View (cartoon, rainbow, N blue to C red):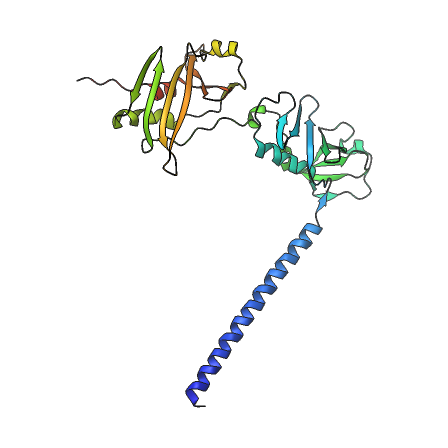
Amino acid sequence: MDRKKKKTIILLAMILLLVVANGAASAWNDKSEKKKEKEAEASKIYLTDASDITAYSYSDGSQNMSFAKVDDTWEYDEDNEIPMNQDTVQSTADAIRQMEAVRELENPDQLSDYGLDKPSYTIQFQDNDGVTTEILIGNGAGENYYATVEDSGKVYTISSDFQNHLQFDLTNLVQYDTVPSIGSGNLKSVAIAENGTDTVYEDDDQVGELAGGFGTLSLTDCVNYHASAEQLAEYGLDESQRITAKAVYTDSSDKEQTFTVYLGKTDDAGENRYVMVEGSDMVYRISETVAQNMISIEETGE
């Protein structure tokens, strides 16, 4: 074997050894990382550790919120017709079913010493087996709170971040109607029906003006979660009074879609207008300026 071939073989062998070594190092690192993750998980302390929960409630002594899962959908017990934001309600359910503690106190004193005899928050949940568990959250402990599980006799501290899950303002939990992304680049036409008269805007300049209204439409100020026929009339949103604005636009896949909004009366101040989305029972209040920008264009002289 000549010297050149011998060098080539040696070089290839060295490359092969490097590849094997790198592979082994990578596998070792992965294994080491997984081991660390397992050790970190094993060191965690949980007050609760349920596989899943079907209902839960929480109270601060004066306010109470309760939810139940019906056919895999979370519902608000007080009014199951109000659509809940499933991600938000489920996030709280997950935090309750597996509540992580910062630490467990050794040889705890009386519950009253931690404010657990008169808790700041009381939480109850029901698991898949129908077992109900109660959690009590008491006084603050620096950046944390004391907590215990019903009659366990154990006292823990939990992060104050957990309190963020206990929302008592329903507006933070509702699933509002969504507004598609509409702008001058994808709005094709707008049809306005008012008092038996239909007006269709398809001119680029006119559509561009109306796009400014649809592009700034925000449905967050909900005044009625499921308006009755009588209430719709009061808002000016029954068929005989409302203005219909139908926008034809293209979505991100360049497919043509339709978004229809009904506009009713202005409020007592005249600064806002009641609106609702086709197919929804929820009534919102939006700025009268935005409303006008959705249904009217600026008149220009000859």
